[in-house]
Length: 362
Ligand code: SAH
Image (cartoon, rainbow, N blue to C red):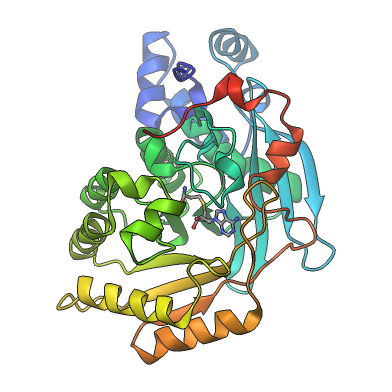
């Protein structure tokens, strides 16, 4: 199945591109700045009253409005976490999660409708990938959540549905829009991007020199084990992945965060922790890079059958890493009452069947 062709939509354009568009329409240049900064404030085209009505009508007949609509909203009674199901302009649905932390409000956003990476424990990939998200839809999740809540988001994590590196061009364009002075203006240091290990994407991102935080979903320290749960490892094995991480660190000077999902009886023993510490220490030897692993107990997904271990197994795993010079943090589980693991809300609402849109990684 091929991707839906990207519509040329206004909110995915840079200020320079909008300038070119307005000039070609015989409109003054300052209109571009007006529209770009209105989009950055979360306005939709129809609401940008600084533009003449006739101009707005002309634009809206030529370009789709890709602003996400709130289809469903679940609010945690425990900690105020909000999970959104957003409906996109073509009817597709994605999830975003708003979390309140001491260091600020954080939004976890999706990068694709579905995913084709095939990780065995993950709900987002079960039906394959439907399409990539547009830059405006990546940005729109932030703007729509802020609008709905009347609160500002200060940190963005790209850890929702989809693989950001499998939608590279749109993701990088989105990062530039997000960072633009006249746009939403969120600094790269407030952005984390997580990948399952698409090596060419990591190397390309290293060249962009964005000071964002890169997270790597590692989840196992040996190729055989990792390939079993993450098919992406057959294409880019652990040695290549870590070599790309070292290159990334050397280019950007930014610490990399390794995500490790603990699955009972699969990758959560003391020996697994020892192997992980050894692997990271060896790969980064001589670089001076601080080593950091983020641990999370697997969220049980009905279809996958993986089990969550007890709290003691996490403590022992973290302690074993720390004793070997690897900083380990245990991810807090927010919104446990509304969770149903990432990707499951979309699945339960989805009316298309998996076979209609299946696309999987080779
Ligand atoms: N595709 C990207 C980003 C999306 S997943 C990536 O793989 O990094 C965000 C994180 O959640 C990843 O670390 C992923 O491996 C993890 N994850 C997915 N399903 C999970 C589950 N059932 N339990 C715990 N973590 C899960």
